[in-house]
Structure formats: C-alpha cells, structure tokens
Image (cartoon, rainbow, N blue to C red):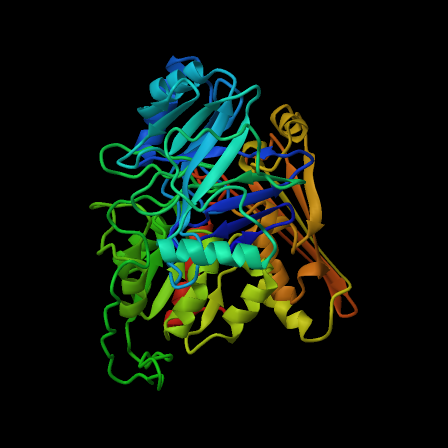
Length: 552
C-alpha cells in the first residue's frame, strides 16, 4: 500500500526502505505499546561521535550505549542517550548505503521530517539547540517550532501539546506526479487522506495525536540527499553534510566516496584465457597462472588484516585490487578506494567482511555480473530466500568462509551419509559483546551484573543469528555444513570470565558422534569478533586462488 520494500526482517522487527540509497527509511518493532522507538541523527565521522560523547558527559548526560560499533541493521558507529523528555536519541556515522531503486513508481524516496509533541516547547527547543546543535528556522506563534540541521527548512518540529508523543512523519515523493499517484493508490486501498493534498504552511497546527499503527512501535528516518532524516532516527553533520534521521539503523552519509550506486559502472577489462559469459561478457573461471584481482568490502577489524596481507603478497595467486567502504579512508587503504559498482566491474572476486546487510543488498548483484563472491557474514543466509537466490545466481560463484569454527568439512562429509540426529552449538562470550538493542532492561541488567554464566538465548540456527547479527555467524556456518537451519540447536551464553570466545559443536547420528571445541582470543578493537576470523578468510582466499598444499 505504502510502497516501501522490506530490506531486512527478524522475529520482532522489520526494516523498510524507500527508493533512495538509505539502508532503510522505517523500522517497525513489535511492541506491547504504541510509540516512537528512537530518533537517529547522522553525523559525518566516528570522530564526531566520540566528540559528541565527551560533550554529553560534560553536560551530565550519560550515553545508554556507545560510543562504539552499532550491532544493528545498517551497521555504523554511534551512541544513544535520552533527551529531556525521555525520547531515545541515536547519533550514528558510517552506516551502509544500498543501491537506489527505480523512481518510476509512486513510492516514497525516504523521510523528510518528523513533528514531535512536547509538553514544554521552550525546553525542547533549548535542548535540541544546545545539545544537538540544531538551529531554529521558524516559529508558528508559540505553538510550533521548526528546527533544521542543514539547508532544508526543518528536519524536526515541536508542537506544544498535553503529552509527549510522535505527532507525524513526513515522507518525500520524487515529484508532484508521484505524490498524486501515491494518493490514488491509497484511495484504491480504501485509505482516505485526513488532510490534503495541499500546501503545508508553517502556521498549520497538527493535532496532538500519533499515527503509529497499533501493536507496533515505529522508528523512521529522513530521506534524500539534501534532507535531514528524523522520524525514528535523525542525524546532524557539520557544514554541508546532511543530517538524516533513519529508523533504527542510521542513514548513509553524504560524503565522498559517494553512497553506492551513484557512480557509472566502468566496463570490465578482458583477461586473456578466461571463459566469458555470453550476456555479461564477464568470466566465471580462473585460468592457470591467472592472478585473482580481489575487491575487499569493509576496512574494519577483519578487513584491515585481510587487506594488508593481500597487499603484502601473502596470498599467492591473489592481489588486492580495490577497497570498498562506506567512509573515506584517505591513505589508510593500500589500494584505491572505489564505489561498489567499480569494484564489481574491475575485480574477479569480491570478499565481504562488512556485515550481513552488505550480503543482502549486494550479493546477488555481484554474482549476476559474473564476479565471484566470498562471504564472511554467513548469518545473512538464515534468510532462506536470499540463500536460494545466491546459490542459484550466476555466472559468478559464491563461497563461504568457516570463520571462527572448525570441523565444518567433516560435517559436510558426514551429511552425505545421511541426516544427523542431533547438532548443537554453544557459544560463550563476554556479556558486553552480546548486548543488543532489542533486549529489555531486565535482561541487560542480568548481563551487566552477572558473576557467572548466563544463558542469553536458546533457539535454532534460523533464529539466533538474526538476533545477534555480528556475534553468531558461526551458527549459520554450522547450519550451512549440516544443510538444515532448524536442525542446529544454538545456545548463547554470557560469561564475565570468558576471556576467550568459545564455540562447542556437538553432533551425533547413525554413523558416529563428533565434538569440536574452539577457544579464541577476541579481537582487541572489536571484541565481538575473534582475532582468528581474518586468517580464516585468508585461508579461504588461498584455496580459491589455487594455493598448493591446502587441506580441502
């Protein structure tokens, strides 16, 4: 009806996008009450997030989470705190963009602003001016105040009301024609506009009611390249950068390199001796003696180790050709940083080490172009529809790395003898690495005060990676080896004494019993990731490149 597209979904939340490049424009979370989940403001860099944290502390405002990596759909680096009326505010940077959708359909581009009901309009304006740096664009008598974070008239407005709530969220349409066709679609579905179409003068005073549908709480971000986002999440950047609120995941920044999908694709350069796909012209086989050109997506804890080793020639038969990241890396990367499309066009193999969202947004596109894909974030494959599309797409081939767990090759071999009766995985980590936005205060308190092991979640390999997208790719990898998401029972345990991350896989069936245990030192900069993971990626790369002496 509204025309948004689901980009990610879990048991209790769904993330929907418009036609723009933002990862999502709306997050809906199942809840026992109606309300606004949070406001997320985009800032330019992680350094600005850290500076914002210091400013908040000086004002006596203590972040609820962060500053640090955001374990959520769309990724990013950020922090969260409560404003003077109890709203949850998120500041985030470095979130992932997605390829733009076609703009012919009468579908919103994204969110343009949100209006919030407040019981004290002067206090609200003062807080958002002094703490977040927004500027007042206009007043409508003493009923409404309009605040901006860039050249748009406003990204947030406050309406004086008897209670604190969400008043409304405004979506941007590409043109008046798109707007009128969208209204026609709503009428076709029996939804009659309560107001409009017409101009929204600044003196228009909205009523203090919330349009949020029953049994869901909504987080919504603002929209296009020039606007600030709010409804759900709102971001402010310095200078000409856009501050754009996004639902729960935070918006992609408007900075160089430009968000993925805005760049003309370079034509691939043919390599001698390789078989070409008749439609795309891309090769899908390596010839003997050919050097594999690798495009690395993600320059974080895993990507830096993988990229540095490739650049140093530590993987015979493979060379780092391009790096893709959603933030400007300057001279940090040893090769040229390019948009995603340019990496697809210029490389033989794309190595993903940036998160499940990248696999969902770009995996199929990589493979249909004829470029091969190595996936580290196997948790994305809990989406069976996505897994089926990736495994059947081509002419590019898809590979998966085992990451922080061993024994997967043996489980695959045993699987050929027949199904296993029982497969279990127990993952034990430090409590702080397992905290998630969906957790309630009771569970968070149990984690933060634990003196011994605490079971955080128990479920199947279909369920758990969705709830812990950066911490439980191992569960999805075991399920890939076994061939059944529902056959693998997973326990996630928090233990304050777990100085090493531990994974225990146990399997049994008519043909034998198997037990594999791995205990890894966490990465010092990103404790949710084991330090061994980048070396598992490098081993997989060596196998793909044909390095001799590999155990296959």
